[in-house]
Image 1 (tube, rainbow, N blue to C red):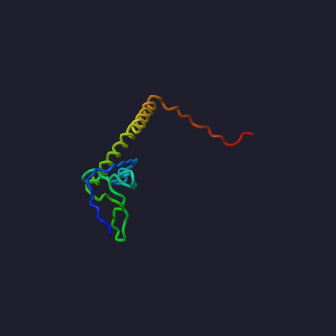
Image 2 (tube, one colour):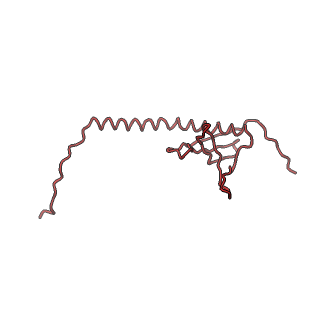
Length: 135
């Protein structure tokens, strides 16, 4: 006979990785993956921007009624909070890593615009028409 184990409130090691989208799709800001306790991995977690702020949305699928159901999810509120914190922390770190890259691209564009203003465009000359091959 199976014994039902009561969930414990002890902390579990949750490692998260986030992949910000270059162009957010609706409320989705990023995708994330987590490894729970070094034994269970979950891919396809979405970092969402909701009315109450950002949160981690678990992977889901559409059922026969057209409603979305989570495929996997934390059973306790403590694990949900820990998972949410890990995913949002990973998202923040990923943004900080990509921010210098974006800034350097912005700087290059600004520098290119300054250079273009400093250098006058080459003078245009009318192209001469040739009526055909010369013999």
